[in-house]
Length: 253
Figure (tube, rainbow, N blue to C red):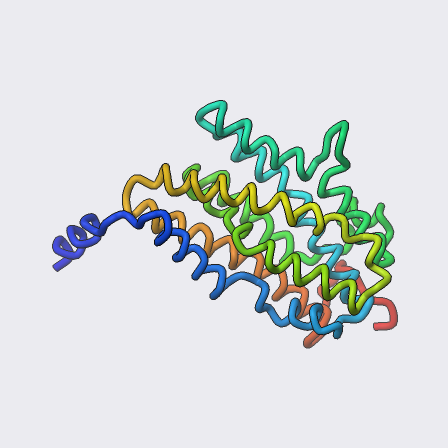
């Protein structure tokens, strides 16, 4: 039976691009963090200023490792075409002589919530669970195949819709943040371009159905990492509201 099962698996046909795209989209619909209770509270205008500060601070740790993650993938790039395309991601977040970059934009958002930029840059008060989850993302792109590393970035397939909603709701419910939303506005045009390149790369380089399944699983794992970050925020700052020792404390609590 085991041998027959293996033969059946290896005989499974490759997914066409449209089918692969559909399966990746299904992962996002099931697992992307747009459905997390913390984000739902945000979009309903039910987060306090302190909870928004906790979110901006902890999310900064994730933002800060994105160019590191992309530099790891870039260093594994097999050809100049890939490296040129992927290098853009590093610049998008780190900035260059003509652009301040996503990390600096996120600092502006954190400052708009009332946080001290120096505290954010130093990572003071970040939840341990945030660090564990984000560091696992670095482990994925270091230790798995380049195909899986690229596929893990495909949450960008879903991010544009969430960012559009988030900007609308932040402006509606938290007007004092309006001056700090440049990060999201830039991602509205960066993410679609990046996701199209990554999707095409995965389709072109997954030569077997098994490799396609590895790519889909890498995306699931990335979604789980994003979800885990919000789990930590919800537990520490919403319900039951137990931040661990050394973590950011909301004033008045």
